[in-house]
Image (cartoon, rainbow, N blue to C red):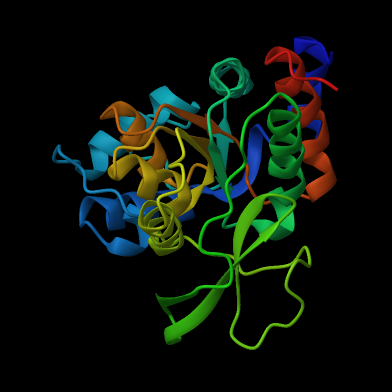
Length: 271
């Protein structure tokens, strides 16, 4: 198993933690939009508490390690690698629970170009330990509002991981898809699972709207989030999201492989 020290060094070298590519300006903009309850950054969450800009800065400082000073407005944002490691340990603990219970699990990502491989390896490991990896609503169309207007996407699964494809994209099953923050895909998948009478997931694993959308509907959800995605950390603070792991979610896909090894080792799911 990859050691904690080795993973910490990798997190910093790959800029998954420490100074990250996400800028302070981007993060602060997201906090302002979240405070205004802009759906683009709520990711399907309906916060119970009132969150102002300063509340969100304080929360993100606690959860991620970003600067707690609201006067700090420029430069790269920073993620504390110790918080990332703690989050990954908690994340692995929920995967271990799912394996022990042989619980049905749903995986989904809004970052297929970056994170598909990470989730796919976890899905394969849980499947090998007797969990049913669900694929409801495959091929179903989902209308999502984007900055270009309303567009129709297709829900697909690659290696057990859900993603959405852009209008006109060819090649079902290919490891490509659209970047999406929308909670509509997970709502569509959960509705299809319920309507079919099949099992509902006892755990949803992913990012963006997959985590917040599931958590808002009362399904346990765990996932990864960057410093400009406060919704997952608010969900965790309010008890709607079980685990939110702070890290940069937009680096090269191969940089996540050591995280896969670490999580599978911690969850005792290594094959």
